[in-house]
Length: 330
View 1: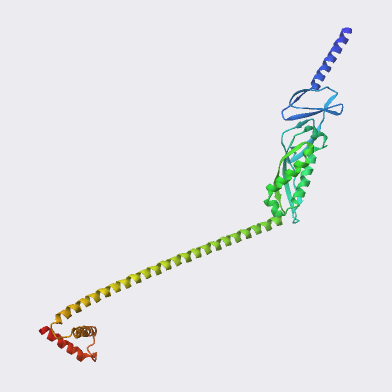
View 2: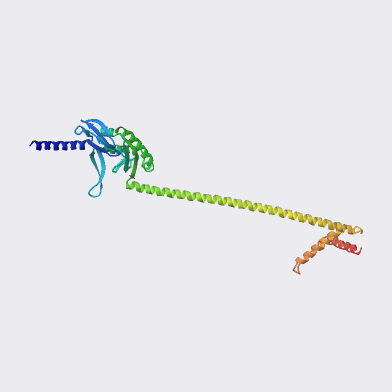
């Protein structure tokens, strides 16, 4: 009996020792933390590796954590669970759609994402009772405040500005909870259907206006270039005509000078020829001109019934002809 009692006690002590060892050894994974309390008071924060605590005296402090799972119908369901280990990695929360009223009184549905990371596990446990729920509610109220100060057009065109402003506000608010907000992203901004149709009409009208402006500017530029080209062509044409007229006038002047020089030379030769006689060279030249004129009159007159009127000075011409005769005799 004594041996049997001793064996039972030994087994009990062995089991107790195994339980103490199992409950006293805690292996913490990388990027995880464990907040340990001793008799209800904070004692230490266990990090990655093997950690030892006193069973029944030291106990990890559990905290609420938010996670998403798939529902029975395949939908996305958000659930909350008490966990002893605190995840130190960056976490993303996808919040459900919420209605926001903009400054121009347009009700808009917005879906946001927030990326945050726990930097102080102690603060995340003791400074807030339900950290995921607090972050969600804070993000929703901040979204309403920020977007309520903007018009719908500014909300649609200034997403980066909104994201930066939201991140700064949330990071400052969650700092005392030991949380670092890295970034906030607006996934969707969905105005009402009638507002979408009005915006589409406005977009089409604006594009049509821009197309008309571009077409008018193109027509204007083409007309200006065409006018400048015509102007240059007219200037070049006028310059060419001027140069041609100048050259023609110079040619005619040179021709007349050459004719005059030839006539002067001919007159000189005639004067030298008749210098030995009493005939007048002037009368000779006049007579030659009259004879040439009569020849042209007879050549251009095809009608035989046409009457030819002789000049009044025809008698003088005849006298000149007589002088030519006397000259030829000499």
